[in-house]
Image (cartoon, rainbow, N blue to C red; front, top):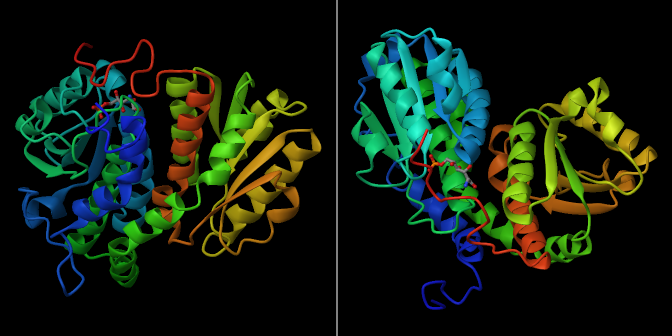
Amino acid sequence: SAAEKGGYDYFMLKEIAEQPKAVADTLLGRIDPSGSLTLDEVRISPSELREIDKVVIVACGTAFHAGLIAKYAIEHWTRIPCEVELASEFRYRDPILDGHSLVIAISQSGETMDTLMALRHAREQGSKVLAICNTNGSTIPRESDAVLYTHAGPEVAVASTKAFLTQLVACYLVALYLGQVRGTKWGDEIQAVIKDLSRISEEVERVLETMEPVRALARTLASKNTVLFLGRHVGYPVALEGALKLKELAYMHAEGFAAGELKHGPIALIEEDVPVVVVVPSPRGRSVLHDKIVSNIQEIRARGARTIVIAEEGDEAVVPYADHLIRIPATPTLLQPLVATVPLQVFACELATARGNEVDQPRNLAKSVTVE
Ligand code: AGP
């Protein structure tokens, strides 16, 4: 009913709007006043966490994209090697696991069969399993050694939005906590990022306030056949997520690429007027990546693509090459997905509406996939 949707036309719109609160709620009580993390729920002792020599993340769909982003954070802040694998592929390839492996299973519903089978396999090999889950008491957390709940609240729309952002928050918390417990040379950076994370829901709110031009742009693209998404570093999984949203909701062909891979094949897809969404890394921090992606934008524009550029406020280098510019607030490099994903959700939702699709219940999809 309209009341359940809180005055929004669709649950998805309501859930997109709830993201600042979902993010804040997921952080609540986990950062203490001194700025360090207390994750008491993670019932794996600090000494066990110090023994871990490998992290393996298993998940499906949007949760898998959160896992891809987590890999950058975990390896950077903890120096522990981290793999991310589609849960449906995991157990069938005889993965190398033992008691020193930490397996993280990410799932909104906690009932995804592929993810459940992957975690059962990991536990059979003696690995510790930590679930990141949004549904209290569901099967995946029940069968795990520990759980870190995301506090997104119930997500009704089939396309995941607020659950994804809170999965990212939970992944950052785990990465920072592992860094904190194990003590790495990034101690100062970890402290600074915890501070930035504690303020990030305000940045998500600011992004939401500037979405009208994104909606207007989406409506002009309703008759397109294909949309491409490019990103680098953590922007690459964001590009994959942007493409998945568009497939699910707008039923359009959409693909995400790592921008550096463009020259190895996908650039052949670029032709007159193809919309290409580019997620630009911050010009601060890893500025080499920024410069490289700016030349990618130049290249695709020279071939006639319609460039839709998502770039940090104050990034002037992209301006000459952007047919459409979407601004996001400056954040630390690794946290950028929390703000960069939001315009892509809005974009897909509006395109679906413009194409007359059922936003909350896309064809052929179920909210939780309980078969393998
Ligand atoms: C998200 O938009 C999708 N509907 C889907 O990819 C989903 O993320 C995937 O099925 C995993 O679900 P889970 O998080 O409940 O395990």
